[in-house]
Every structure is written in C-alpha cells, then in structure tokens.
Amino acid sequence: MRSLLPLNYGYRQQEKCGRNPLSFALEKLLRLFSVRNVAFVMFLCIYTLFVLLLRGGFPLDDFPFRSQKSKVLIRDIHDDYDVGCNGYSMDFRIAEQQRILRSVRSELIDSSAKLQEVNIVYEDLTKKIPEKQLELTAVLDEIESARRTLKELQDRKNVRIFLPHKPIQDELPRASVKHSHLLQLSWETAVDLSRCSIATFMPLYITNHTQLTRPMSGFMKELSSQGIIVKDLEDACLSFVIIDSPLNSSSMLPDSGRNTVIVNFGEPFRIVDSFAIMVQQSDRHLANPIDFNVFLDVPEYNPSTWKILPNLLPYSREFLLFVFVASDAEEIAPYSLSDLSRLNTSAMLSGDNIEMLNCSSSVGSSYCGGEGEIERRMRNSTFCLFFCRKNYTRFFWLSLRAGCIPVVPSVDTPLPFQDHIDWRLASIRFHPARFPELHFIIRSLEMAEVLELRRMGRFFFERYLGDNRAVVRALLASLREKLEIPSPPEALAKAVPLFNNSFTAPILTPINVPPLDDEYLGPLEGAVDSASYLHNFSSLSMYSYHSWNVIGQPGISFEFLAQSVDPPTESEFYPDSNIGFRPIEPGSGVEFSKALGGNRAREQFTGTRGLYP
Image (cartoon, rainbow, N blue to C red):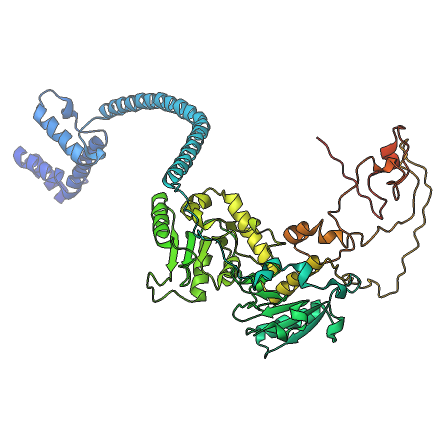
C-alpha cells in the first residue's frame, strides 16, 4: 500500500518518522490548546462552579483547615445581605428554621393559654357590667336625692322668718255724718227691684255724657250685643252711663243714681249722696261695697289673642319675684325701704333672683320704664308684687296677662269681681304687716301649686278680664246674680242637614224582643226627653261658684246642668219623692235590673260603665 501512496505523502510519512520527539510533543500541545478546546474547558469550569454554588458552597468549606475567622466573616456577610448569598449549608438552615418554628409554636401555645384566661376574665366582667350599671344608677339617684335634700335644707335654712310689723294705721277711720249713709249703701238700697222683674231678663238703657273713645265704643258695642237694650228709660231695669270724666253731682242722674251703673273710663272718682253703682279702676278709699273695681282699657275681642300670650311653661323663670314700688306708694308701704333691703339680702343668701323697680320719691329714680318695660319684667318673673294706689288694677291685669302670679299686699283692696271669682286660686294675698315673711311664704309653695296658680290666673284672665267682650259678659253675669234675674236662654245652633232635607228619620217604635238571658232589664220604653231648664235660679246661687271658677260660663241659663245634684238613693221608695222615677219593688232583689240608675229620673239616654277593682 505504501507503493500506492503519492510520493509526497510517502515523503511526509518518512519525514514524520524521522522527526524529533520534542517537536512532535510541542505540535501535539499546540493542537490541544486550540481555540475550540480552550472554550470547551472554560465552559466546563464555569458549569462546575455554578453547580457547586447551587449545592451550598465549595467542598472545602467543611474541611478543618479553614479558619474560624473565615467562617465568621462569611456569616457576617450572610447576615448583612440576602439569605441566598450566605455561607451556611442547607442542613444548618433547616435546623435553624426548625428551632425557630419550635420557639414560635411554644410562644403561640403560651399566648393561647393566656388568651383563654383573659377571655374568662372578660366574660366574668361582661356579666357583672349590668349589675354594676344598676348599682351605679342607684348610687347616682341617691346622690341626686341627697343633693336635692341638701338644697332644700340650705334653702330652708337661708330663708329666715322675721316678725311681722305692728298695725300700720293705729288711728280709727273717721267718717263724717254727712256721708255716713254710704256705709249702709247696699244692693237693697241702690236698686229698685220693682223695675226688674224676673220675666224681663234685666233690660238695659244706655246713655253717654261725653264723646266716645275707641275703648268706650267697643264697650258699648259689646253691651248692645249681649244685653237686652230698650229705648225708653222707664222700661229699663238698669241704666248704663258711659263716661271718661267725673260727674259733678248726682243731680245729673235720675232718682239720685238709683238703678244706675256708671262705667268710668277716666280717673276714678266718687259721687257724693248718690246710689249709683260705679264700674271703674278704683282703690279701697273710693270704692263702695257695691262698686266694681275693673280695668276697662282692654283691647277688643280677638280670637287669636292666645297666640301672643306667653307660655305658662317652663316652671322656672329668671326671677322669683318682681317688686314694683310706684311713686305714690309711700303711704301704703311706709316700711318699704328697710323691708326691701331685707328681702334682697334674704334672696341673695338663698340663691334666688329678685327684680326690684323702685320709683318712689325717696329713692329719686329718674327712669322707671314704661308699661312695656314693666310687662317685660313680669314675663321673666314667677311672682309679681306691686306697691301702688291709683293704677293697681292695671298692674294686676298686666300681671295676669304676663303669666306672673299677682302678690297682693292687702286683704282689703278690692279685686275684679271678687264676690264671684275665688282669687285665692290665682293669687296670693297677705297683710302688709307680714311683708317680712313674704319670702318664706312664696318659697313654701310647691312646683305643682305654683303652676296651678299660674294656670288659674290665665283661665280667669281669658274668661273675664282679657278683652271687652269678656269684661261685659262678666259684668252682666255679676249684675244678674246680684239682682237674682236669670238670663234669657241661649240661642240653639241648628245643625245643617247632612242630606239637604232629602232624608227623614223613621219614627222610633218600641219592639218587644225576648231577652237573651234570664236577667230582666224592665220593659222597653219609648224615647223620653230629659227635663230642661230646671236650674234657672239655682244656677245663680247653688251652682254659682262652679260656674265662675270651674267651667267659666256664668250668667247663662243652661238647658241641662251636668253638675246638678242627685237625690238620695232611697227617695224613690217614698210617694212624695218618686215622681218621675221607674217603679221599683222593695225587697225583691231585682231593683237594679228593673230600674237602672234608680235614684235619677228617667232620661232620654242612660249610660253605664263597668268598674272593676
């Protein structure tokens, strides 16, 4: 085969066989370290290094010849950087994680045990919260009760009681012989009843001696609408004279003023040697026993007046007492200065607020405020006290309108319609000598009593004093009671037909229906009308107090009276008192079933009500 090779190849083969071994080894090394081989070796080295890093480090890390310092350095580097770059082995890290897990599990078990203990304590406290709340409420109530008791004790302790004064007037009043007949002036001498028959219902004649003002015109209008007016003086029972200036003598009045009622809108006065009945704003020095002390300068009737009146609630107001001393009050209250100073001191000690407005000449006050300022202070006060003579009725009227309870420092001063209205229900009257005890008296009233006094004051004001219609109605009712003349029946308001007169009610006929049970309620009866107008005269005397102070409708002849008295229960058993009653069989045991309400006359309607203990 060598013969077949070319010469050149044979030459090279021969030359190779005859080459130097060193050069041959060098040539082999050069071929071994070619670019391809070097790249392959580098790839193997990098791959091996990467595998070692993934397994957790070099194998020499666990050899004992590595110094402890290098391990610490590697751990410090691990602590400062990421976990994946530390120098720990996988087993070490697993053991460390297991140790941490055991520690956390132990802490969780301890925390769970403590949480159970806390839950038990919490449930126990939750159960005790309602009990503690009840105990706290009871303690707070006791504290509030003790605080109120302490306040009451302090108030009672601070409000001292002073001795009353001696009589203010030591001298006896002197009356002249010429005017002594006024002391015996009464309704029996001032009115000729022969002109006032009970069948005439008190006809009135109206005249005036001056030009009418607006209040006078309103009064005359209401008097004409409510009274029975006649055009002839001879046919009248009473003659009304409306004036605003004093009359010189009784010669201007017929029959010396007998059967004459003078309505004075001006300054109060008194006619000497006259039987006239005065209706004016007067005081006790000018008033006769038959006169009326009424404030007449009132507004006209307005159905919306209640909207502008102050509310009666709340109970507490800014001032407990408002004291007003007029310029003419020195003769009435000579002890006013010392008593007012003592009253102010007592109020300061007890924590009460008292408003004082002293306009007397001894104080020298230049500004006392007008009527509006006085009424504003009344609205902010619970009680109102006035020391004045001329305009006392005006201030009394303002006090009632403001919802302030009047405190009257006199037991003799005439009040409006005091013969009929029980002013004890709406005011406080005391003797002027008891002024040092006034603070203790008004503080002794309870809250409910104060509110009732305030309510009754508003009731009397709206019914009898608030406007000209109320004043005229009250005046006519009082005159009718004094003269014992009933009023004409009230006009009955006819109901408007519901079906425009196209419906006729059927005639009621009794039907004998057998009873549903064994109880016998008596035979069925037809409709029986109740007896009407049975109390025309008894309403003027027997039921007068109830009409004036309870229902507020005096001087009216009611067709039926709800508060009429009932006869005794045994009156139906006697022949002289059983007229109008149903027959009853005594001793049979069926009296109630046969005569329901046996002590009352039969009526159109009978109602029953079951009462159970």
